[in-house]
Length: 454
Image 1 (cartoon, rainbow, N blue to C red):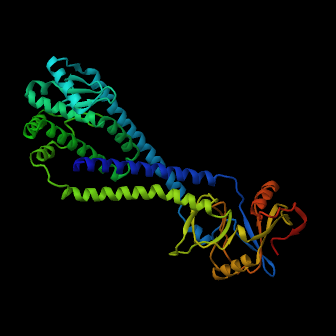
Image 2 (image 1 turned 30 degrees about the vertical axis):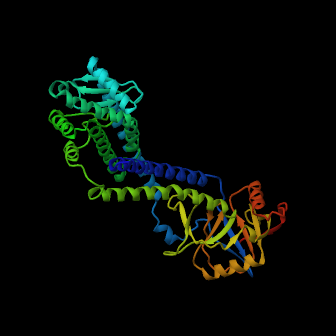
Image 3 (image 1 turned 135 degrees about the vertical axis):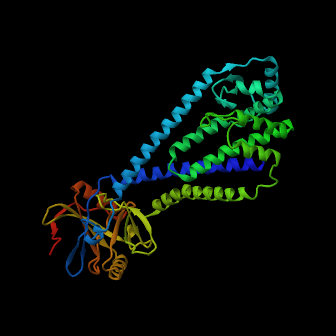
């Protein structure tokens, strides 16, 4: 494979990975938002030491942190509207280009010259093109172009047919046939779709320009090899530059694309190796491909890790500069971040639960879930809270942080009480999921009512 061909497909792969990154990111965000919309309880955690102490988790953060938090939900909404507006504008741009191409095709006059039809059949056979290709003359466009993928037509400006020599016209037709042989019209249409979705991405525009330029280089090299007269082909391009004023390059592909000056220079003095100016381009493209691969694999690894996590966890919220991982939050109220960074070490998990019980709050009468910890888990939890007084403990259920209460005092007991805005059936279901597999959940104990505030 020649250097231009390698660069062309590398740029196309880079564009595809950018699009894949956009789709994967959108899918992840939709999944997280769907998870955050599921019904959940605003939980409070009660701990038993010498006496029961309520840890206020109704807000999940203290007032000072809340005042410094930015409302990213509104920012995201503005960004979404900007992207939607830009996307609509790009769709209108692509629609206008498609309408121009349609008008150009309808205005073309078929070219049925017997000699040229015979040459066309021979060229199609040489290039292995099985499609039915037609020749047409147009007075609207001023550069050769190919329109259509399944039933392509090569449009030649009338000025080219009358002013250029037959040999030069042949090279220009061959250039268009190389576009057909390479399925460039279809690839270009997909490229326009990527531009529409990634209009905000500078790398997408850079890749798009590079793809169009390398596409013309590939066809130029094919014509030069086939005719064996690169100088004659260069003269044809030079004459084409004198005649060209405007051509619909957005959707149509043709010999007028790219910088004709650079293309002529490459034909007369072809590079011996893909070094120099192309080296940095290949390096940048490799970086884009690597980033795309990372973004493609990251969600899968994150999903696999989440699937292996226990149903119930308690972790410590990571402090500034401390390593950790981000998990989605169930609290989507204005002013709260959608994700919270927690330490990777798990303080409590499902295996540390000794038993669960459902009871009623003595003050409010709402259902509560009482969790009794095993001895080892209670000791580990007490040590973690003792070392992180003033920090936050993240209560995680099914991979989602449902509460992040502030640790006011060391929690040295072995019993937790979860209360929240859920009905008795929801409390029973959650208690059943938190209970050990070998033990059931007792019926709601109305007689065993405990005050959550002393």
